[in-house]
Amino acid sequence: MKKLLQSVLFIGLLLTAYLSHAKEDLRVSHVVVVWLKEPGNAQMREQFVKASRALEAVPGVVSRHVSAVIPSERPKVDDTFDVAVTVTFENAQALKKYMQSQKHKNMLKNQLKPLVNRIVVYNFGNI
Image (tube, rainbow, N blue to C red; front, side, top):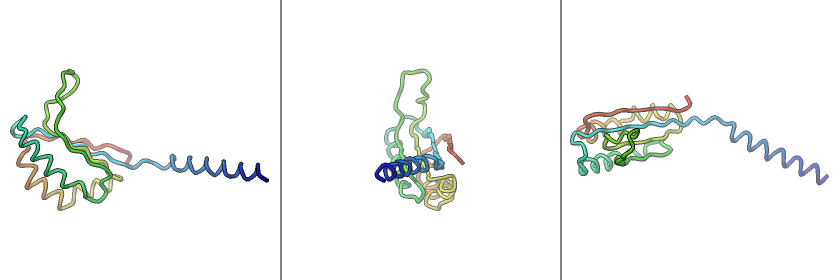
């Protein structure tokens, strides 16, 4: 009886582990790379970073990081930009809601776009 109970428990644990790992990862990453109107301007970088952080509490956001470029001497590293933002969402629908949210639109229009010369966006994940 003890062996049977141990076997059932073991199989249950294996099944639980399998099911939890088998669940598809639906997270989506949204990466924004920004070149400011005044490249290298530390005050503008800080202004962009501070304003952007106000979007951290938007529903559907799993994690969010915004920071200035790290200069590099490696030729393969593009360090020509000023600031980058990485946002991870629960899924593609959460990204879509974020992009359509009034808070996001207002922040872009009123605080971020006036600082920006160029922007490149990358979205990737399991959809």
